[in-house]
Length: 208
Image (cartoon, rainbow, N blue to C red):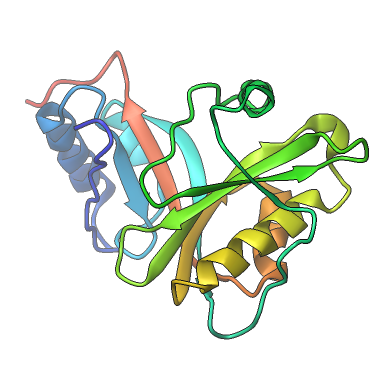
């Protein structure tokens, strides 16, 4: 399944040629559009042997964990619970690059208004993939409303909602997203893992 990545478990002293051979074998056995994920808890984050096997480095991510019982987070008085089917919210979703967003059961969509009262920032919170764990989707802030602290306020509000039902939050962002990483740091989140995502290349080297 494309949404299920492969997690190879590699020793740090594995020879590069052995890693490349394994990477080729994984590529040959992968389903269409299946991705490969290196996690620094399971493998050294070295792209070269995987790229030599035909994988293409797509992105780097950092994963964070938040103990929601270790501190309190403020509910923002301007936050509004909204529906993705509302006309102005659908327009905002399109402006933020997620026009087809559909929330799963148990998720709540939150908007923050700008200076004129119209929504300029969106995020969502809901159940995570593990027991007692919440997940947060920071959908985004319109460009003209950035650098005003809206992202920090929205994230704090979403964590406050999560803390009502869950004890922990797992989340992540692109490794070069300095703004979001600062927000994680402000809210007491702990860097849990660094990851590399690979996609299948069109010129994959066949296994021999």
